[in-house]
Length: 196
Image (tube, rainbow, N blue to C red; front, top):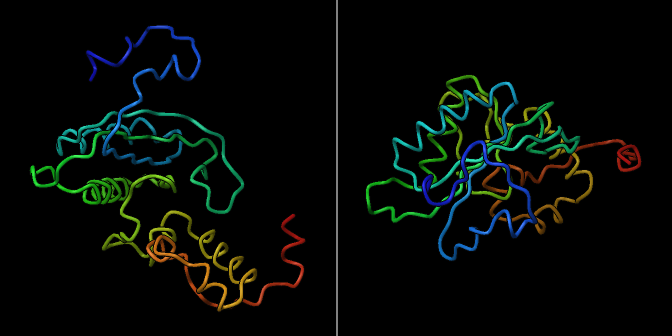
């Protein structure tokens, strides 16, 4: 891929979206994993994740982008300066001894945890959303990534929706993330107005 697609490191490139990403019309099974990490941990994170990808012979490419912190309760841009490390590639045949996509994301999460690198995952990308490390204190991946903010989000949800509505507006993804709790929390009556 380096010799056929990627520009030289010092190459200046200006163009429209279509002109810049002319090589992006791939059709077929693909994957995308994206970790958000604090900017000051981005170099170490890239080194760690690249080593795992090389070891696993992952057919993909890495990109880094830097974004400002968001005030959204469960934003993956939760660090003052967030570096999104994105791994995009061609989905492989798991029977070829390359392991599974969920196995890859689990290994990456465990290794970041062992290296004391806090992270978030992009909500719209691939990940093993049900994963919780053996030595993690938190009960769900969302609790691990967002700490008290995950509890706050569930509390807001329970204030907006009755128990029956929480069940109705639930899905597999919310269950996998541990965000589907159907508890009722006694929040202030003016909670909605206070958030505006």
